[in-house]
Figure 1 (cartoon, rainbow, N blue to C red):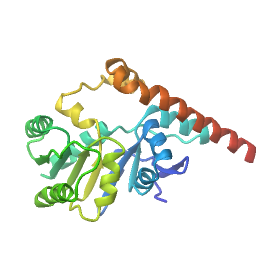
Figure 2 (figure 1 turned 90 degrees about the vertical axis):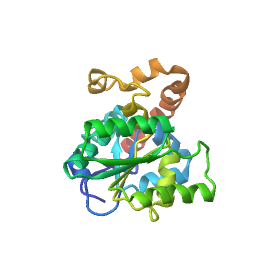
Figure 3 (figure 1 turned 120 degrees about the vertical axis):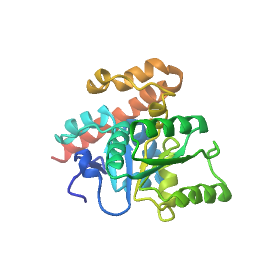
Figure 4 (figure 1 turned 180 degrees about the vertical axis):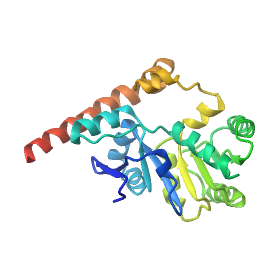
Length: 245
């Protein structure tokens, strides 16, 4: 196990700083929150993709608090948006390149415009794939071709979990990019399509609450239904650990 990883309910969760993310060689970076954890426990392919991440970030206050509760491990929440901002600053310093795969074309256009304005040393491109649960072989080949023609330093994938992580894991050997980051909702946050909660809410671990208030119909199941399932996992793990010792 990587020395900057910590075991969390069987997952190799990242416990380092963002500066430690930039490792040598092809690096697959995913995130874990209570929702993706619950989905992965029901989806073996998704779980395999997460377990085989080179870096699995603790993206959620529930993961941070649970790690402390279960084993005393001190984790720092690192959201996909934090990773994205850090990587862009790095790329700007080295005149790097990045490619955005996912979302609507209008969103990609807004991202490209913002990157050009804020990080003028970065060259970026993007591709909006068809919106469907599964891609045909032809569509899949086209996506990989678009990425590899550009051959970016960093590939950002925003197709929502678990679709994005499973796609990356299935195609990682075909993708010509040094860092591959599955960051989901960050595409909407960065483009301005969806406003991310302010730093006040983020720093107090209440980003999820603001998002729920703004989009209750879409997010209630994620936070309440799966929140209950997640809590059962945590309590069960704590009880089993206590029995063993």
